[in-house]
Image 1 (cartoon, rainbow, N blue to C red):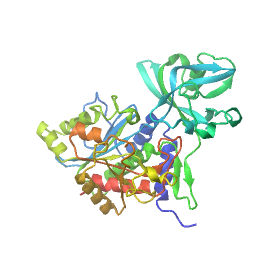
Image 2: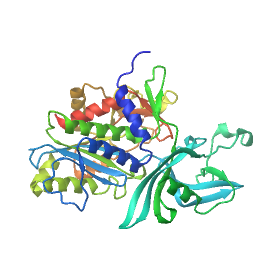
Image 3: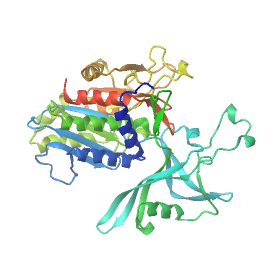
Image 4: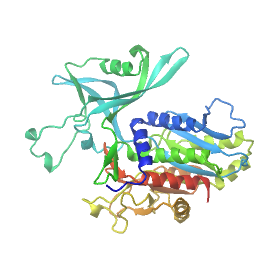
Length: 432
């Protein structure tokens, strides 16, 4: 077997994904790596005066992290990498305990653009966060149940002989997973989740809980040239951004800019939240970081005027069974490098200036890249790129690792591309 390049990075990516079944876990996993690299947390109520070096702000499923080398002036431009921590999935309703025909079930709500059939007949765990009553007020606690606890069973073909002519799933009736037998028992799920979080059920005031496939991430292919996992969209980019930022912060040669990682929540549902890309979170954090170093409003304007942003989100590789749905002149393949995504209607923020900035970073990193444009007859997706560009007025380029089965419960990408993306982002953050 021919050795597969970039396996070390891919191994680390799989570890990151397995530890990050929810946006809140993704932030916790990233924070652990940042703290190991010497970054420190700054809370909104803290005094940030004089803060240099590596810092981060964590809020729920969102994370803003940056590194200020000394003695760079307060007007030093930013190099921003934007990503998102959330993935389409099934989320547990506030009153979850239900039953039908002698089966105990859990009521779920559909989050984002979910290909519903991909969640059928999979072994599912529960992850997310609990809001708990504490001695000094409320506290948040992560919970992760990685055992096969639930399953959304598909109807047997004997009871639906037309299933292969087109499967139609009712989003309310057909997606409720089973997890036991008997009548509905109020509080049963809460007790199980609280036990996993080492909390008392009576102390749970609220939750943000979701289901995840407990099959571990891994490799696929004749020479293990593909990565297969849940949540590649968009933990590939979050992991690459964290890797690039920590590398920039610990390098012998300090970066010429202020490198920034912005990992937002709720991208899959439009980014309209206090932790989404439509919020002022990134703008406020970056502005405050300038002020904390003695910068003036003029310094803030100069830092922003010289800034660039790379919005990193998964992209579509050409599908061998549906090649006609792709643009015939733009058909990216796995392991050919990240794509640069273009849409003249501003579903992506890329323009020629952004392409030049990203292509230059690719050259410095010695990594390939591929252009991507959607088929004119197909609707085009979007990302946080246009939102960030419009919010900050910063030139932005949309890029992403190409893969198959986007938004599926289990996705695929090339084993080399995540490492390519990380090396390119590092080059973008530090020089050029």
